[in-house]
Amino acid sequence: MKEQPARAIRRFEVLILRPLNIAFLVALIVCIVKTAWTLAVVIFVCSFLIGIIGQSLPHRKKQTFSELANGKTLPASDGELSDDDAFALGKAIQRLSFLIGLAGLTIGWKIGLHWYWALLLAFGSYFVVGLFAALLASKSPAKRQSNKMPLGVPDWSEEEKKALFSDGKREHKPNGDSEEE
Image (cartoon, rainbow, N blue to C red):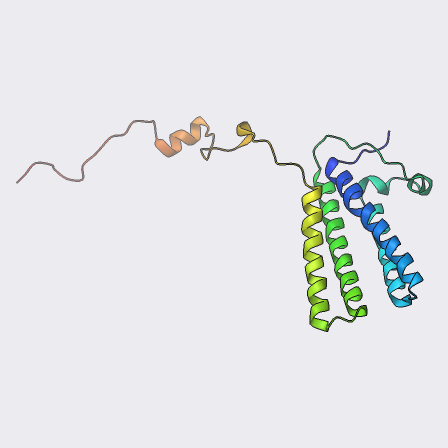
């Protein structure tokens, strides 16, 4: 049985990686037609690196080359996102953001922007893509689960209660005589 990805990983793969890969391939064709060879090489490398990011997702690591080339998508599982899957998704989002930032820097530089505008474009695209990818990959707003929310009062054992509150009886012992002199 094939390992099914969690919904967050499936969303990231289908809504972020595939459209970006298609956009980079279209931009590659435009750069080749316009004879912008340097930019075409950068865009080709970015498209290749997006494929590497997609292959590094946990459910893709166990697939063979022929299964990856087939392009079939496995249905997403409704289970919780494990810690390893969440870490892998976060790493993929960070790598993608860094890649888009570098692509933005290169594209800004090649179209003739000043260095400070190209850097602003790179940093802006880094943060926007990272935020956008994280929002699309995250679950819909969580349902409130009041039974799992701690109320702030721990469950103490009887021994702990006795140690903290003695036997439950409060006695007031004055320090001195309470009679007036």
